[in-house]
Length: 294
Image 1 (cartoon, rainbow, N blue to C red):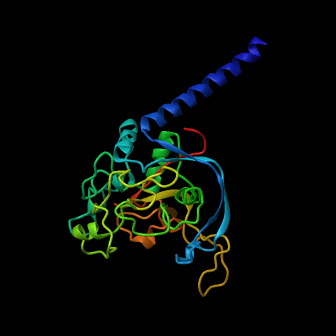
Image 2: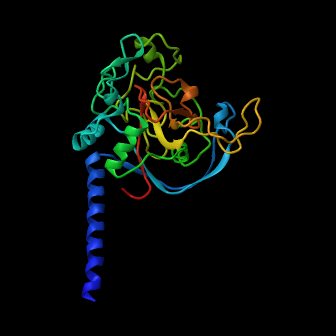
Image 3: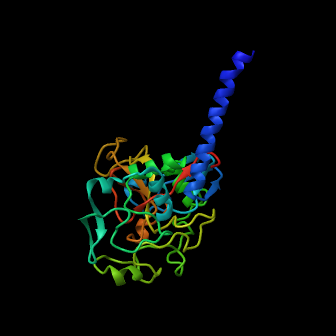
């Protein structure tokens, strides 16, 4: 009996050690999670004013999960880098995209530490690729949200709403950090949304705007957020002027949520974008998720 029990006890001890290490990393990361109870919802462009890649609308089931209350911040990403010595893809390349004072351009030395504008500890980390975000998740014991989880949470458990707070825009200066009159003052070469001013030209510290119905902040605007999924056509998608196809558009990963450089049309709950998993840019960041309680 004793000889049979010893291997089992050893396995249990090792499992406990693994769980403790994982929990410790989650604590060290400083991430606050919000529980999202699962359910069914209509996923896609339920208002009929979006892009073709948001169609067709489908009845989608989501299980319970946990989602980061905020986008991962500069300070949280720095903890990961300091603990692991991780080097981002932009750093390995020796160049990246940054604000030059007139436009966003590719320059030597641009990375998550240097994007050409001020980034404090509580700003969302930017200039991180999907691969960089996955490395952070591996360290922190979490994962990226799936695309359906992200939209379900943005809609406050699948409500039929256009933005994370509802259907109307703008909503004073409380909606979110998007391309607006504040941005036009510092970045005049772009087209900006008129009649709304959020007070920020570039990124805003996380949590400066009101949370949605689940207590999640910055689901609309601030930075585009990586999801785990490949950027593919929805099942049943009918491309214009082509026969039916369900083949992948490209081998890219999904981005959701809009950013400080996007107008309201690109900040809707159902809006989709895709980029190469190695791509990093000054308006791309991420938030994390967990299937079980972190």
